[in-house]
Image (tube, rainbow over all chains, first blue to last red):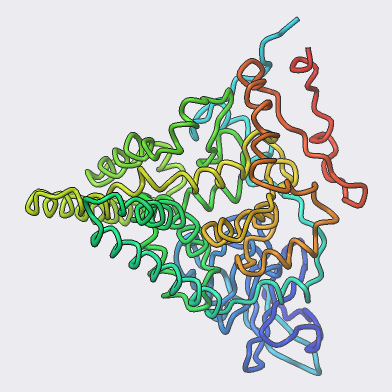
Length: 104
Length: 364
């Protein structure tokens, strides 16, 4: 059963940056794009257990801190070697200054 | 009284050491990282095209200029200094360009990284697909026996092989046959262990392109009845690889294996500005392994920020080799022996068992 969960306050994430959010034994990455929109993906790179919140956000790309694997954090698409498996993304909305993500 | 080594290492990627590394949690482990604030790390990770464009213009100009000198002075003794410069630029600095552009950190613009990566892969005689994946594995499992595909000097050390590496002969003994095998559509079991199935076809295609260029160069040399095309395209790996080996061997040689702390298995060495240009600052190697997202031009700043937490860097290439040589000699008899890196009092400890290894056998 999917539920909306408050992940963080809007101001917790800088523009063109990412933070970590842990919930229910799972880990997520919450992004704020350069055009001030919010997105969410699984927290760990699909290649290794490296947390994407330690990586670098450039435009709509998140780069993994371990092997420089690159994903489009808006779609989850893996952008090529050394990552092949797409990231899972989650619906996001902003309510009353909170970033909410829908988790099943 | 000497005793025999306690451990026999199996460096294949599908053997006993592999099984043990996975079982003990050494494979894909959680590695130590020095604390750096997110703000500082974001600044250090920032990409820009400027430094790499500047360095690449200098690099290509120097390659073309020295190549012109070789052609102009061909069959006179004046060709020698041009061969020295061209050889090192082609046969050695291609390795660092391959490396940085493979990480995607040299340029901010992706296609610039990709173009230089492909060219440098050819120059350094590496399959651009298989080596991209082997290098990812090297960062996941740095000097973990049975997992890391890029351990340059295995234990016990083969000193003849290490010495021959300076001549580039090993590329013609190993790299070229590997490219030929891959061009025929065959990847080894080790290669299959780190190249995903969906990428293996690309590896075969890349090998075919490389071999095609080599064959074309040989054909031109025969048609012109001249060694010149081979001296410019195929053979720089023989006469210009020494600088790459001199700097690259120091990255991990003689240090601990099977630890999950780059401070213990990786070495930072201060180098002169020319070597740092050729090597693109990879002398800051502990820093690079700990934070591979930081571009080469920001590594000196990262070094200044975290050196309180790292072993003291070797002050020179010469100093590092003087330190390593007796270790290699001792490893010939006791392969478990290694150079234990001392952390400064200001360093944070991590996984204390790696700092307290029993080397009593080697001390006897």
